[in-house]
Image 1 (spheres, helix red, strand yellow):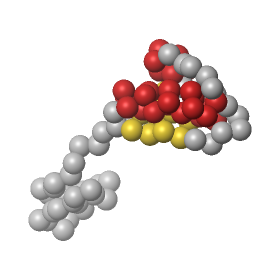
Image 2: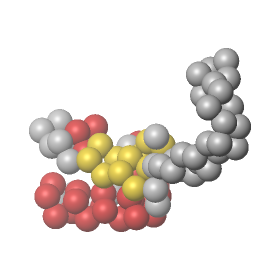
Image 3: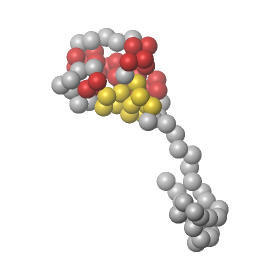
Length: 81
């Protein structure tokens, strides 16, 4: 993350007071396979929700021989972090 300031003073929260160049934080979509399969520690995390769902579906099908719909994954397993 880029951080640039031209003023060395700190504000009440201890953050630089002055111009900054900070990228906007984005949310990540996380699916933890352990929530569905207690013996699997596979975790998917992506800024793109559709990509996270697709990767989770592929993992569940290839490793656990289960097919879950997009909605099942979104409603039961998807976390936004």
